[in-house]
Image (cartoon, rainbow, N blue to C red; front, side, top):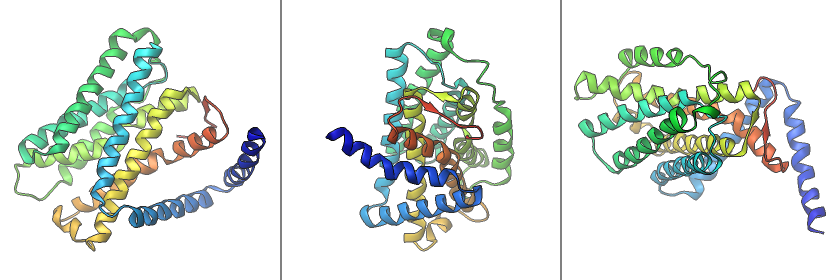
Length: 277
């Protein structure tokens, strides 16, 4: 009886996903924008203090790291994980911590410290303890393709605050690098086409965290009627902060779609079609 009800519930979901998959790219993009706008409206109605969205984003990120730690300690394998993504994450977290200490020390400084420590532990496990299972040939994304543009962009567009120029450039660099740090991980999944559960859970958690963080900024801008952008500085910098948040969300949006589809279909292992991520 229960099984028949579950099958009945899956039929409309399967029909919708099949219809979406058959649509041309422009229609899919439009549906994605509509879905994102709908989610933002719901969050604005449900969550009264939008700062809680930022806290929720950090909590989901921490949950994703916990799943990653479980994979490394219990499964004793780092297969499917990108060392380069972890190193980029450690880099922008280290730079952001430096900026926090010299510019504004708050609770997020402590949270970033904890995240950096766990990320460094993950890097240690991949490089030394579980090196035999590391897919080095699949982790072939050239990180200078993202690091160098982020450096150049941070020199050209950075906050117009009273802080030292090195600190302002460093702040901009960590914002830009965070937006693209997941690209090597997506390349690994693109190369393997099959993503085991714990890696899929981790990347999905990153996607949800990025959406919540993006929603926090977008709703804050709407609530302040644009005054928040002025508070962040002048010139192109405020726009680039918001744009970076949106880029992070859309980079992971496609993967999250196939993750939910796979989960609804009862599949433990996520199989990605050609062209995804």
